[in-house]
Figure 1 (cartoon, one colour):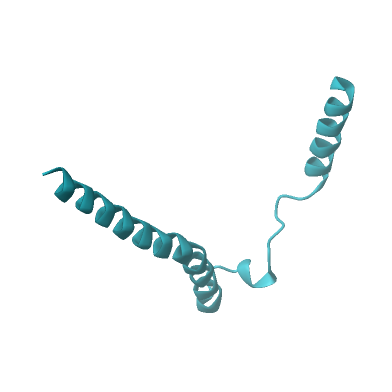
Figure 2 (cartoon, rainbow, N blue to C red):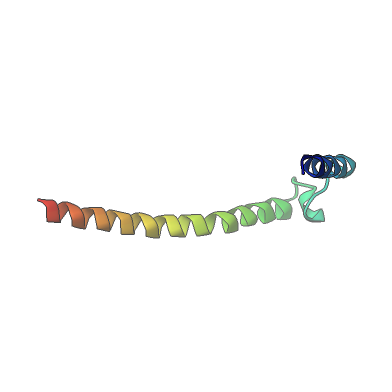
Length: 75
């Protein structure tokens, strides 16, 4: 079992060392000086952050309402 795990780790490490570090998701991301590429990068950032923001606001308001209701019951 240990031998298989070590072999797996070795193979993954070998594959990672072969793959060049300059791989990018798209060709447009290579030139960050262009306004279109910068806009694309910011749009990806906002798309990734929006679900956390929305669910954080909803969760925070539910938590606040719940705590406020319990505080009024205890008084």
